[in-house]
Length: 375
Image (tube, rainbow, N blue to C red):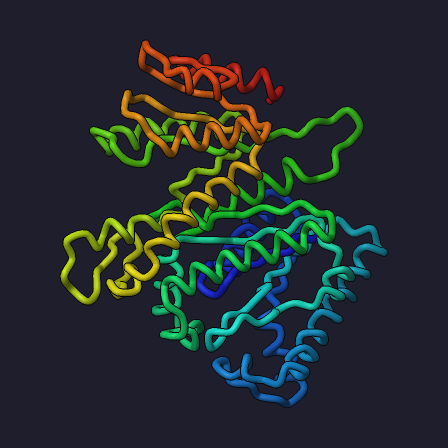
C-alpha cells in the first residue's frame, strides 16, 4: 500500500507520518517512510550542490523540478521493485503539494510522478494554526519560514494544501482524508487515527470479510456549557467508549483556532500568550484573521463529516447550539446516519427531524450504532 501524506510547513506532517510508521511497525506491519523535502537536499549534496535550507525555494523553477524529479525517480524505482516482488511492504511518502513563499503560491509536486507512484490513499495532516506557528518559531529546521507568513496566510495555505490534495485524489480516483495531528493541548501526534483508517478500513477485504471499524464525527456544544470541566469529562468518557467499540472518531476540538479569538477579548497588548499552544501571537494578526477563522472552522468540520460514516451527537444539556443543529442538518442531508444522545425529556422537533436514532442512555445508543454498522 502506498500512502501519500501532505501538509504545510509546521503542520507536523513528517512527525505524524513517522509516528504512524512506528505505530504500524509495532503491530507487525512492514513500513518504510520517505520524506521528499530532506531527500532533495541529500540528492543535491550527492550531486555536489550545496543548497542552504532557506534558499531552496529561490532556485530556478526548472532546476527545482529537476531536483524533485530525481528524488521521485528513486521512489518510483523502489515502488516498482516491491510491487514486482509482491512485497508486503507499505510505503508512506511525505511531501508538500504547495508552497507559499514570498506571498506567492508555488506548486510542489509533479502530476506525472504522482501517476507513476499511484498512491492508494492520500491524506493531508492539519493542525491548529497556533501549533503551526509555534513549530515555525521554535523548530530550528523551520526557521527559514519565521516571519514569512501571517496567521491568516498560514490558514489560507493550509486550506490550499487540503484543496489541492483532494483535487489530486479525485483525479486519481483514490480515497482522501484530512487527519488532525492531535487533540488540542497535546504536542504528540495520535497515529491511531490514520492507522485505523489505513489498516482497518481501506485495505482490500477478503471475500466475505467486512471492515472492522467505522468513522464518526462527534458533534457537541462548544459554548454555553455551565460546567465545562464536567462536560469535557463526560464527553471524553463517551469518546473513549466509542473507540472501544471500533469507531474512529473525529473530534472537532482536535483542530481549534477559535481560541485565538477568545484570547484577544479585552486585550490591549501587542501580543497575547496562548497557553494551549505555548506561543505568543501578535494581536493585530489574530484580528486580521478573525473572519477567516470563523468561516474556515465551519467548513473544516463539514469536511470531517464528509469523510465519516455517521454523525454522533453528544448533547447532555438543554442549551440550544446552532452549531450542533447545523452539523446534524449537514450530516443528515448528506446521507450520513445521525445518532443523538439527548438527556432532556422534551426533544426538539428539529432534533427528531435530523436524527436517525435518539436515546437518553449511552449504552442503548452505542448498542444501536454497533447493530446498524455490524461492528
